[in-house]
Length: 140
Image (tube, rainbow, N blue to C red; front, side, top):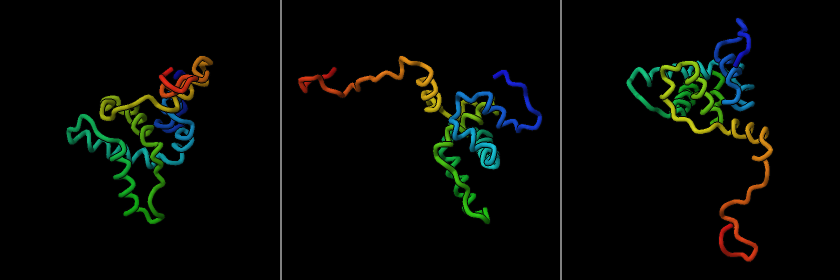
């Protein structure tokens, strides 16, 4: 956060950039050319919230968008990468804080990768818990 708002940058893009640690670089690159997808996601998420749902699946919303775009778009269905689904939901939670609890979030993989890149202790080799000792039996 802390960047000066640009009046020409759409709000969702500015929000995503300001909270870049919550989004993958791929999603940040995808968003500017696909605001129509995010706007459609907002529409479906708000319908769900208005219906009284306290929790809902962002993946279900993306599947609805996929279905609707296949039926309605002359150029064919939208390209909706499943990897972007959690980021659409995170952006919605930032954009509509009154509905922030609609989706359940796990730690973003992008955030874990960024944390690992910045923390030398996390980048050291860690022996998996299922590895065996040198003699071939027992856990380490």
